[in-house]
Image 1 (cartoon, rainbow, N blue to C red):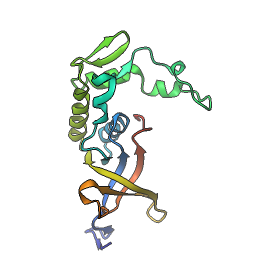
Image 2: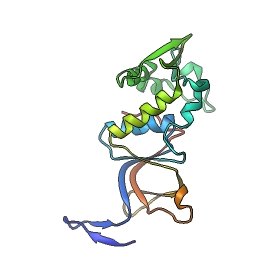
Image 3: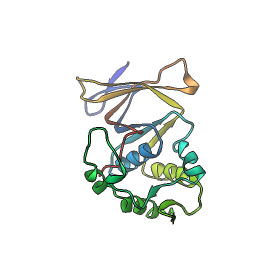
Image 4: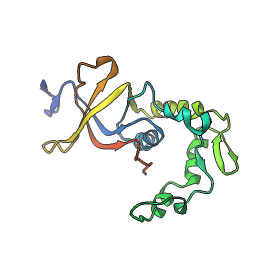
Length: 190
């Protein structure tokens, strides 16, 4: 990897990109994590294997996208280790979720405690995520599979390698980030 010095004299690697947060997976959880990071000033990247973020969202709720349930609390979940989930629900409640969408112009309706976009179309949520993320400056790389994630002791960063579908035979340059979040288990943070 070629190296050069910046104007400040710092060593930079060419062919790499540096982010504060890299989110692996652009599903619902990954998009929410990226929204929180970007809207709080982090240079954020989403790496999504599908052709766009939110693609799998379009299949949820029978194509309508059940965003949440009005009667959700820690008693609705069972964990193998008996963890107390009340802190999680206190941190990002059902009401916080509703406010998140409505403050961004997505109107919702309740059907027997199940909350859907007023359009009853999951694509409304997928399109909104794409718009919200791009407006917040999140870089989205779709059609890319992460092939490796490794912390690097010398720099204190995490290196993420990926392979794009259009470049199957050639790995992409390393992407460096300060934090990574796997979309399947990431939750919104403040």
